[in-house]
Length: 341
Image 1 (cartoon, one colour):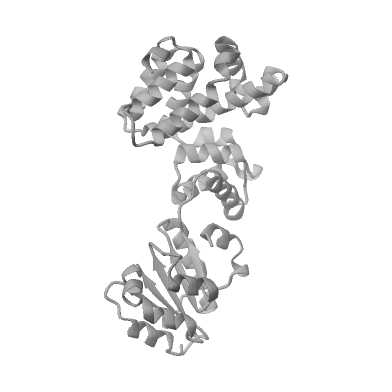
Image 2 (cartoon, helix red, strand yellow):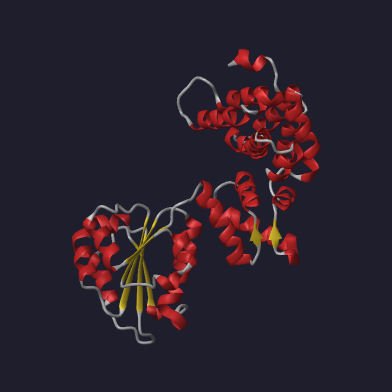
């Protein structure tokens, strides 16, 4: 079970005698461990007499088993946690397999590992009678859903899907940083309790965000030289081409969606609004699509997908910088774009 699912409804999957928390997403791991300790020990969660913690390296199984079978003087349950237990699991796999079959009645064994092979006998036994919780990073739609859910649960705010997408593109995929940004956004929006894309635009990203929007404005205006200049400034400042590509995609995917709706007979202004273009950007977006014409506009999405795919690929002669530069030339409608491909 992924940590995000468990954290949303922990009472449906209460702690068992053996728990394995695996994966390297530190924010999720911290949240899971904190809640597990509270659920297992209750009012005794802060009492060290009911809790033992060990480092997995060079730890022997007998020490752990003794702790698990020691009756707590102050509480009904005892929690024994082994941190960084990868080597401990490898060294004592057979003994742990036996323990899972007949665990301590009052003790809870909690292992934290980076890697957890689900096909092993031990993993299958924990899956059957224990509680494995995966703390792995998330991407794409899964990460967007987490951001929306987290904003509601932690800050009692409604984060729109569009705002979640933009937030991830600007702040990255690290959950700790996303949580920090959501905290700031919740304070910023105050009593409205709703976080929209324009709120994210104002508060997250700083100079890089402002420069990215200036670059996309230059693209729409057909000023390839200015767009390339701004791209160069951000790359020279150490920004990753993949992150900058996220800002370009955020703007131009909306224009691609509007083009598709307009091709189906919808009024262009109405299509732009429905696609989620910010009100202040409606005039320039409409001017851009009319300037490049429908045949070019209908290629926006395929050009974005091609550039995104090439940026993810480790093969090919084109550098990440060149890939984004070529895309800018294509989107501005610069004649040189085709020749440089």
